[in-house]
Amino acid sequence: MDIMLKAREFASVLQTDGVKGGKAFIENLFSDEKANMGAIFAVLSLIVMGVLMFVGLSILSGVDAATNINNTSAFYATKTNVISGINSGMSMTTVLMIVVISTAVLASLFGIFVLFQNRNQ
Image (tube, rainbow, N blue to C red):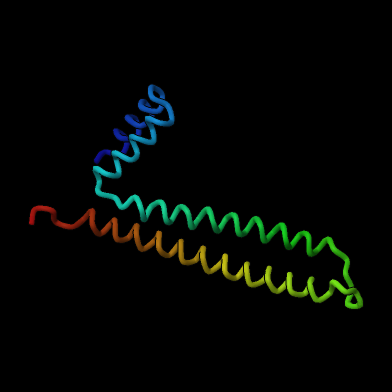
């Protein structure tokens, strides 16, 4: 498969048929190449989920930093619980991103190995 040829073909499909045509082109390309679309969408979903988790945790961390609650306040225990939840969430998001990155690296290595295997057998 010539990548430059496919890229030109994809660009012309986008210009003539728009986004729907581009989506159909990508689906046809991956089905022709026997790609596992479920796995691709699962990895993309994990990446989007990780980004959303990171943004949400950053917002919570900003709210926590903006509040001035001392240890005599009735909300001090709640703030402490929120802080520990933020720290746990950051750890979970970090682990999620490590898993996604390592999965992508392994998948690309597997793809490279498949490219170089002998197909005449």
